Length: 366
Image (cartoon, rainbow, N blue to C red; front, side, top):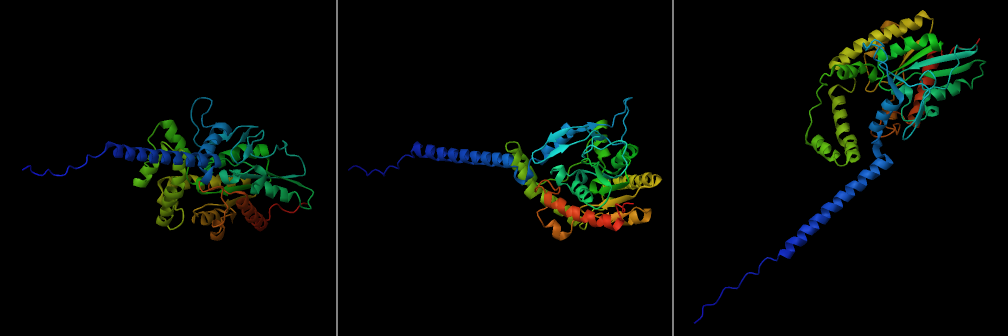
């Protein structure tokens, strides 16, 4: 009698494995195409302002000249460090910047200053410059237009000497350069955190080939976004803006009580001492010519030590700081670019108008 045979197990068909692999490959390809589509969309539409770093790089490359090297080859690290190229126009993604014959973002001015002109020189960084908007949109140029609509026989000129990343030492240097040339009737300084975070430190690192300061401690989110950036740089920039940067900035604000405290930052300690010396020097330079010198505070996070210092040194102080309510409004160029947009400049114009009325500037015409 023949023993019954066990039922045979059907062999696993290789075709099934192949189909699974094909589906996985299709899924992976679809994900890559989708990520590529998101990357292109973010780049072309400049979603979240991801092209802001590239645009500021263009500014440095196309609109700036290096001034830290003297003719004898030595370095002047207490000067302007950089200056705008003269009579140059650069068309950025969302705005156009044009400099006059003095390398300033202003219409051409007549030299020497003619009779009947009241000229206001404004110092500052990118806030005064009006980064990200056309010149006619900036609060300074709009203020100039308002002044010239007054029933006043004088012609008013607001000369914008703002440069991106200028600190107080550079502002003092450009004031020394421009005072005898521009011959202003008043000088304003738009003061921000950059005034304390010294640009000189960056230049010293470059010139002395020193190691830059260590980066903040990073976690797996930072590493994952960096890895993605090798293939999809604009998508990675968007994620850094939405997740990493906001998280880090919020933690810094919380750690320091919602304000900028120079004494708690290494660069801040050095920069604040330099800034104080430069502010006193600017005050004295203006006093020697009988000129009003007013500091306009637009620092965020707020710098609580600034106003008491100005009061102690006899430097007129006015605030252009956005209120909490205004900070919640759509007043910025983008998520990545925190500079004021047209609405932001409109609010700044209102604050500047009130500040100048409080200071009695410009004084009534004779």
